[in-house]
Image 1: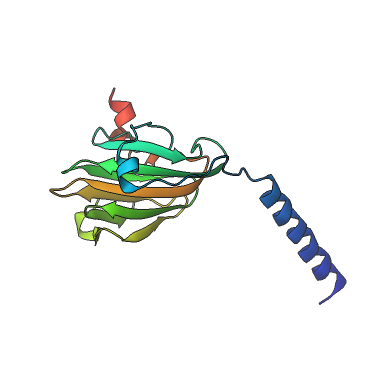
Image 2: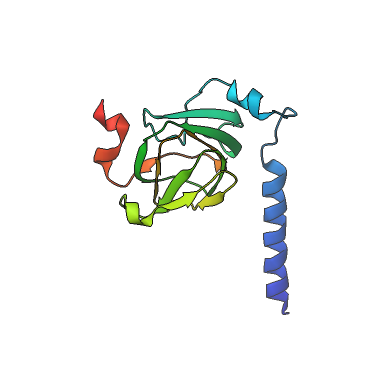
Length: 163
């Protein structure tokens, strides 16, 4: 490697370490059983769909600020969530129920993938996606790095715009 390459690699390594050192850390030890998680009241907050059939429970971190966060999405039966996207990459894990999830800028039932309990999926930063539930409620654990938001692909679908 030439000297310029070595220098650039060194600069990137230092920047990466500095970013890690400055990253927020969890302040408390956290261990909850499924029953304890079920007892936590909805908190709302950034990253939720705003859909009346979706309760958002922030369990770790603050999704509206820089740093790691985890949220539970409790989704009622027969819910349909139009195409939207979020800032930052997110990972979803289906904790209970059967989640129907798809990627694209418009809700398209033919693109829904059936994700039973235990399934894991991603929500890439600014990648449009949509979801639906069937006859049962669904709980999904969302983990990401804030700040996050929710932007509907069609602004008319945004529940906040309907008030």
